[in-house]
Amino acid sequence: MQVPRNCEEATSFEECKRQIAAALHLSEQEFDEAYLFPLQQLIIYNPALYPCVEGSELRVFATDATPRYPSIYIAYTFDDECIRLHYAEVKQADE
Image (cartoon, rainbow, N blue to C red; front, side):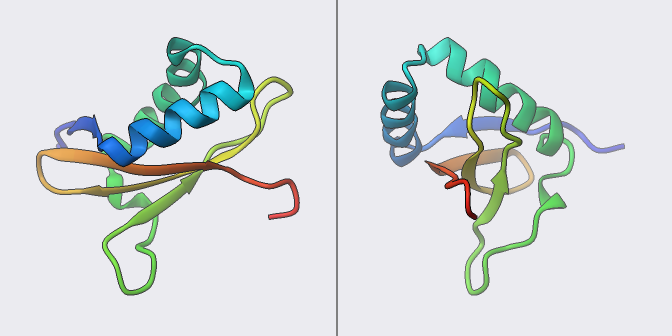
């Protein structure tokens, strides 16, 4: 049985989160509910689900877009105890 890992936000992720929330007119709570809670449900038990970016330990996840929330990329790393969120950016419609 896999044990869920803690999830922490690096300073770089916190800055990305602030910028995206401001651009989308979201509170921090709305951002977390729209993006982080669903993400954590997907990767908290199996963070190796998404492949590494070539030449690094970073893994990238793209959220699904909804009418209210555009898709974003989230980059993270993990070890046996923790998932660390490092970066986020809005995914352009043509990507």
